[in-house]
Length: 454
Image (tube, rainbow, N blue to C red; front, side, top):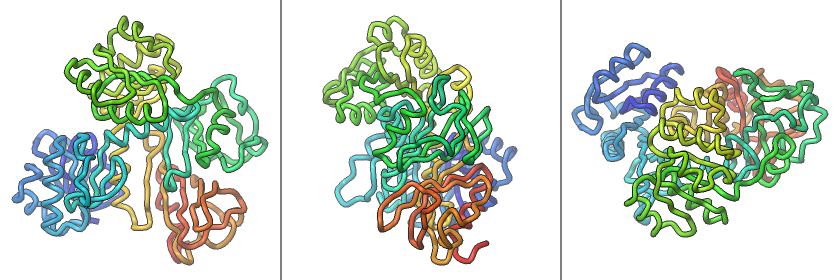
């Protein structure tokens, strides 16, 4: 596949790296020569220095021959203009990443989609708002019973929740096959000491294991309660009134959560106070220990640091943890910081880079891939894939199919409904299947769903 990636920041650089590793024909474009030099040193891809929205640059990149053009600069306007121009010049598919919330309010009839994703907007195949998507992920975390990460699949009917096992978890030392899990739930994978594996029935769980649990939406609270001790957040404090904070607070307030936003800018706090119904606005600095104490952050069920500054988010999250907030979540823009957050004992770090990249990268996969999410800092990925007629996965019950090592079937969505996979589950042609594959195993997993493979 011929791919042009415009903008070598966190998102564009990561997408370029992944596509190059998968041996796609990639051209990287950036206006900054230093970034171009860095990409050339690290990856085996073609490069071009130039302004991504300039028609002459797009002509030099031969976007009319491209199967996919990804526009991921730091400017929403540049991304939209470049994606639209590339589409008009003949590119097969174009994707633009935006960060402002202004483009969510679409003119009627101009594109369709869901919050954070717009399809056909201005003629662009997909517009991805990473900040809205991050807010939605944090909302799902807030509504869980102690999960440190949550992803939705099968039209939000299937949940994949990550939990970290405390010392008093009821599941420690018990073989998985002996656990009485709630119906329509199952263990998908485990991370232990930075190694991810797909367990079998004889495996037992240990303190500190990070466990990925599949379940139908109505069953997740019960299985989370079995593994960890948590509850749905009833009081949430958010540091930052940007797009992430505004969208997250609005969603939480609508379901009855007591929400407070701490915003350093007086003008911004005043504007949000008049536009956000049911949200408490406080003008102040989220890195000020006395201010956090004054606002009762230690009594909150969840604290979210979502400003545009990684260092401020990290400091604020650490202070909230010191004050006793049981769950602390932070937005992390520099992906390399995520490991530092874990070392510091912070519960959750959500990366806009990863969220945006996951939605964009599915466009570089076969047509039957409907969704893609990376887990555990890239140690695994979960895909939603449609089973082809005559594919190996449709040859009988899952118990009779020898799944490749490192592959786990999570759920199946069919004309009969949605179910969590078990040995008796039969996949039929046209069914959409949620599959977890460890790092380096996604090609093997995808072959299960292609006609005439194996």
